[in-house]
Length: 634
Image (cartoon, rainbow, N blue to C red; front, side, top):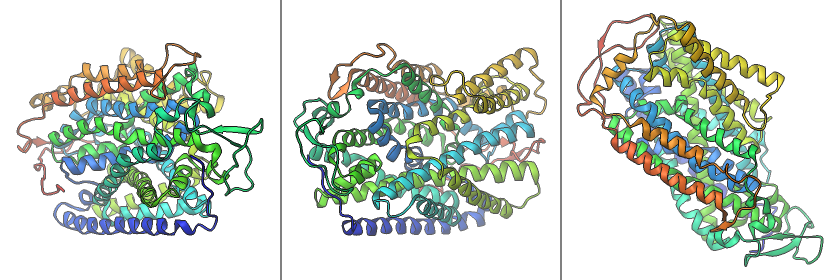
């Protein structure tokens, strides 16, 4: 299918801009509704609960979790990676499955402890389990820094989308300022209620877009099996140079022409078996996803579930989500890689999402409507994740650092104000970082982000299952962070194979193990130990850990390690190793579904229990926990 010339005047974009403006206005109206709800909760349960907490049923919880997990990485990062690296982007399907494996490992215990012991902040477990200020502050830093990086990534995605949509009319700095204003407005208006309710709207838009886009692209440009072969029926030859940035390259014959329309003809390297360095990149990408459930805003999703049973439903549904959400982005990138030489220069240089949608909207009225829906979906994915991450970072700063460390007597109103001020500062810092990073660095950004979160795995993972004390965990985090700084300054000797963040995580785990052997500490400051955790979980049947281990193991074994450097045979338009990996992901889905079904939450979740509310380092008097509130269901 030949490319189409762009309209430099952008008159064809007017309707698109109007629809996007209506969509943003709708989000603000939903946030206003959330504001009214926040005021009611504040009157009944206090301002901190109203701003940072909530109680939501399975349907709402799934939609907000879906919106949070599928971010700017999904709508701009995946298409760009598919455009530049081809079928390596299949790894993103496995990424969500590994995230759910991490959720199955951590959330059954974290969620039950949060109910029984009345946790408010994502780091309350650290305070409860280890009982020292230094580990709480260290853990808070390991949670906040990745959130700043994450919000930066969303800003970059937003700016790339807006630049492409407006044909570079709105520059990057202006786009990021608009972005900051939007997410800060949503947070100030309704807090967590605003985040969750706008997530519901945004998730519906995202899913509708995901379900339609694959079929439309197949009808307009051909499916992957059709455009994959080098001699496919869409093959054409075009000039390397166009007369201007908005005109399509002319058809031609001869040495100064390039192929277009078939993936293998334009990008034959996509069908080569991945190199060893690419293999390592895929492996550590998947490994680091284990830490994604420790993102503060993800932990908050476990806390705001109205029951353990509803959280289990959400985990089971999230196993299916990557097969709906990730393939459209991969198809967008691969389609652009095939047709890119035949498109105007302005679309060739745009991101995969922006370039393809610019061409698609000119093919017909329905396609124009779909592009509008896809653009709103892109906005939805970016904004829903960013405002969630902002709320997570704010809760750590205001509750863990200020309320429970620096100023224990701080009023609830001041706690919320500190959180809102922190959100402004985080947005400012993310804006500065975003000016120096680009959307091409999404893969590197997410590896570093989740690598930082991996520093928390010993604190949470060992703390939930093993009788480890504070000293080894604190020493491990310190050693991991110091080694990361050293590797950043001096260089990584394993560069190209092992990311520096993973080297530092290995140092962390090693130090924890050694300290447990030679200087384990007493754990006297802890208010919670593993025996108490087991007692709390005695009324539940937890997911089988062997199934979780199999999920992660199959994800790693599925990586293309078995025939480096060879040319792979093509199956359904994709290299054989990519098909093997996708089939492995289906097996992981089935194992995860079995693990979720075997998790049996306590039958009497609404019974009252004697609990200890975590308000600081020193033990507090036991008090009776309130029952889970169903009134907050949507």
